[in-house]
Image (cartoon, rainbow, N blue to C red):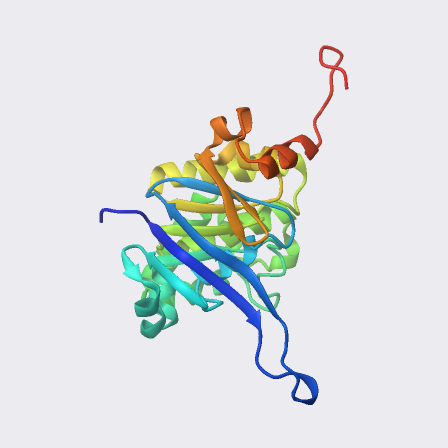
Length: 269
């Protein structure tokens, strides 16, 4: 397949409108305003911005949880509308979502093996024997022990749970992952482990990542390119090293300047 993994053109998402209380016209909020952006194949595209900038709304549209108000999206070369008409299975086999809170995203009443069974059976159509083999491959891919499959989500730390959530996303065999603040709930040392895992998986499996975070240091460390969002718009896109070394937009400069930095004796505050 040639062309970008994801292509967005003039994408808009508006909430509200219509008639509210006592028949009054309800106000509208434009969460995403005319975004045009590409995610290249095999790339990690970081998306940064303040809370309320539209990052998560953009992510939810990409995975089919929100419908765009206008504009076009091609996902793995297919129009968004075609995937939507094809149903959940088509979306799941094409693009997967990794949530911010890994423990909350896993069903507490099911073992990890049962959780992984769902995408393997419903999205991939695997029979029992193939599912068992594939589950062993998945926990190995995210560097978890085999007995993980027999345990429940509450038995794992946040970092371990996020590895399991990544394994569940990989189970669908999608080539595109949308990662929405995937390490923000983790300690710094655990963040580094999960980021290294994501990089290894991308390189070995040829995945494409849309990586959303408010943490600029995390985005700088993992991204090939970075898109900066402000009030629903993308105000700057550049290679990560270039953007952090020489930001062009005033908002990007303000965002980088406001990020906390570790001061040393050689570089005092």
